[in-house]
Image: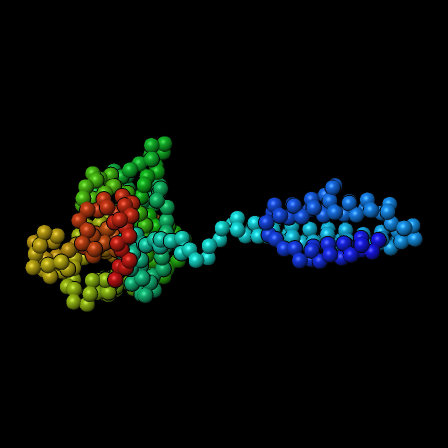
Amino acid sequence: MEKLLQQIQSLIKEIELFETNDTQAVEAFRIKYLGTKGVVKELMGEMKNVAMERKKEFGQILNEFKQIAESKYETIKLKTIEAVTISDSRIDLSLPGDPMPLGSRHPISLMKNKIITIFQRLGFAVAEGPEIEDDWHNFTALNLPAHHPARDMQDTFYVQQNPDWLLRTHTSNTQIREMQKNKPPIRVICPGRVYRNETISARSHCFFHQVEGLYIDEHVSFADLKQTLYFFAKEMYGQDVKIRFRPSYFPFTEPSAEMDISCTLCNSAGCSVCKKTGWLEILGCGMVHPHVLENCGIDSNKYTGFAFGMGVERPALLKYGINDIRLFSENDVRFLKQFTSAI
Ligand code: PHE
């Protein structure tokens, strides 16, 4: 019996000292101590050789020993599982992170935002409207009744299923909607995409972008229009830029004008971009026609207003020295990632 007790003592030491994080060694430990032919079973077999009066004492010691072996087994098993999980997830903290390429704004968005910001500083709010529009908002309300010859100025895409629907040819539809929705004073700019049935070339496309503006209040005059657009042109093209207004015609404004700026590329000397004139046409404008105000339920005896409209592609071509408008819509990342600022 004493010999057995000594043997158990040294087995306990052996177990206490045992360390591993290898799955196979853990299994070997279980077989050796707790398996069907293991040490615990073997010691139990010794019970029959123990004297009757010490059987109880031996039984207790044996039980404790079994518990020690079992709890050691649980501990080393857990440790190996942890070790395996960590090495399996293969986290290498020294590896450089995955690159996250940053996108950049589209040159049209940059230019559009620059135009918007200038007018926002003058108190204009931004309004948006639908690109699929009905005939009334795009034409009729703008003093262009059916069969008006000026409808030919803008070649229109009609929706086949319903000829009353079309792709808007200008963002003036949004100005009509704003006048219907709100009472004067109204001061909005309407940026957005517009469509015209034109042959696609380096200079023109079947869709492009506009920013149009509208200001309606009592006593708004052509002088207000000129002052607003002078401010815009100088902010946009530099304080030294020269500006001129030419009389023009739009059905929705009377009087109407077109605004030119001195050519920023050749300093008015005459180049291919300004067709040797020294001037670049940048927008159309005028005093809102009384018919248009009345069509939207605004009293034209009490209120007057001005409106203007400009393309976004043209100034972007000038600003960035791009010679083909098609590049804007081809989604070539090599082209698009070159633009970071419109300033
Ligand atoms: N709607 C005109 C166009 O698309 C631009 C414009 C707007 C002209 C407002 C005058 C006044 O060409």
